[in-house]
Length: 621
Ligand code: FUL
Image 1 (cartoon, rainbow, N blue to C red):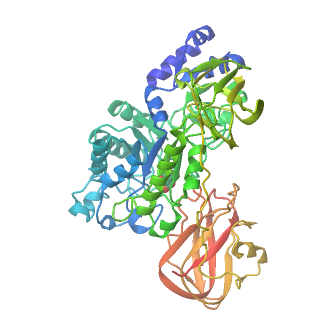
Image 2 (image 1 turned 180 degrees about the vertical axis):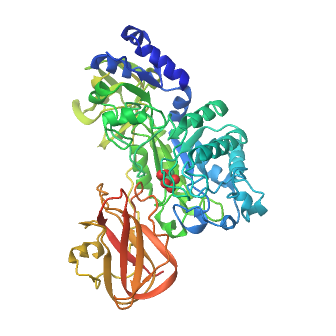
C-alpha cells in the first residue's frame, strides 16, 4: 500500500511523468493540474494487481454463514449467547466443499467471527469460541476443518472477520480492541495456510460498553500484506468493493477503475465527501466524476447475496431457497455485470448444507454449464478499437441464441463506455442490445433469434478498447416457480386498526405492495376480531427502493382487551434490515393468547422520525 502511494505521489508531481507511465497498478493520484482529458487517459490505464485479477477470474465464490446464530435463529447475535449452544450434530465441511466445488464455485469464505464475537476457531483472545462449546468437547475447530476440506478438493479459502464485536468487552476502547482484533487476524492468517480473501463487514454498531470503535485500518491491512500477501481484502479492505446492496444486483454501468476511495484509506472521507459518493451510489466512474476526482482506484465490485432470505440458516426458510430463475437472474446481473458473485449458502444445525440448497446449486450449475458451454460464434479473436470502430463475428449456421458476452483485457485497463450489438438476420442488420461498461465480463440478453453475423460498434471508449473475448449463447427460458411468501397465518380480512389511525390499514391489507408511510415513530395497533394463539409476527418493509421509515428496533405487545398490554419476548431488533430489507419473521418461542397486537417502532434504520410498513402478519405455527 505504502509503496503504491509513493509511486502515485511521484507521478502526481509532473504531468509528463504521469503520461509517460504506461499503467497504474491499483491506484493513480492525478497531478494537480491535470485536465479532464488527461485524467480520463490516466483512468483508462489503472489496472488490477495480480491478486485482484485472479480474484476477478473466479466469478463464482461462496459465503458460509455459520455460528451461534445458526442455533438461536437470529440474524445478528447480541454477543451474550451461551457458547454451549454451538453444537452441530454432524459437522461435515467436506460435504460443504464438495457441494460448492461440484457447483462450480472457486472459493469458500467462512464467518470465522460474526458480529456476536463467537469465534469458530479456538482463539487465544477470548473464551467466546468453539473451545467453550459442547461441540467435540470444546476441542473442535471449524476453520481448520473447512481449511482442510478446501485443500483436499482444491477450493480457495477466505475468512470473514467481523470488526464489530458485540461480545468483546474492549470493543470501543480503541487501542485495546485494535490490539485484540489484530491478534485474532494474526491467528487466522498464520495458523491455517494460505488465505485468499479477508472479508471485513462494514456493519458497525456500539460495543457492550456502549462505545463506538475507531479501527486502525492501516495496521490491519499491513498485517494482511505481511502475513498473506496473496490475499485480497474486501469491503472495509481496499481490493474488493461491496456492490452496495444485498439483493444480488450489480450495476449495468460498473467501473472497476473507480473514483471511490476505499474507506480504509486515510484520505477516504475527504475524497468521497468532496465527490458526494459512497459505495451505494450509482455513478462511481463516469467522465464527469473522473473530471472531479483527485485519484482513482482499481476497486472492483463483489455482489454478496444469500441463497435464502437470511444470511444464517433458519429451518423456517427451508422452502424459501431462491428459485433457479432467481439465481440465473442474479448470475446475469453480477458476473454478467462485471462483478464477482459471492453467494451465501448457510450450513444448518447438523453442520450440513441443507438438501434444498444443494439441489438448487446442482440445478444452477447445470444451467450455467448448459448455457455457456456452447459458444455459437464461429470465430472468436481478440481485437482492439477506438470510437466508431465496428467488429463483426461470423455465427455458426442455424444457431438460435439470446445472450451475448464481451470481455475486455483488463490487464490493460477498463475502457469501454458505450457499445451497440446488432445481428444480421435475413440479410438485415437488426438491433440486439446495447451496453455501457464491459470490464472483465458483460452479458447482454435479448429475444431468441437466428443471426448470420453479429456486429459490435464501439460508440465510446477511453483511448483504445481491448476486447479479449466474446461469446454467443442460448439460455433456456426458466419458469419462475418460487412460492408466494405467506406473511400471516391468520386471515387479515377481519382485522381493524384499533387506535383510530385508519390510514394504517394498508399495513394489514394482505398486500405487501401497499405501503403505509407516516411521520413519527408510529405504533400499529390491530384488533384481529377474535382470540388467536400468537407465536410470532412478520414485519415486511416496503418492497420498493424507498427504505425511509423502515423499522430497525421495535417492541411487540399483545392484549385481550386493547387496554392492558403484555410485552412479548423477542430480540426487539430487525438485525441487518438496512442492508437486507426482506420480510422478517419473529418467533417468540412461546404462545400468547390475544385478540389485539401492537407493533411499536423504537428506532428507524437511519434514526429518523418516520415509519413505513409494507405489511404485518401474525404467526401461529
Ligand atoms: C452484513 C451483515 O450485517 C450480515 O449479517 C451479513 O454478514 C452480510 C454479509 O453483511 O452487513
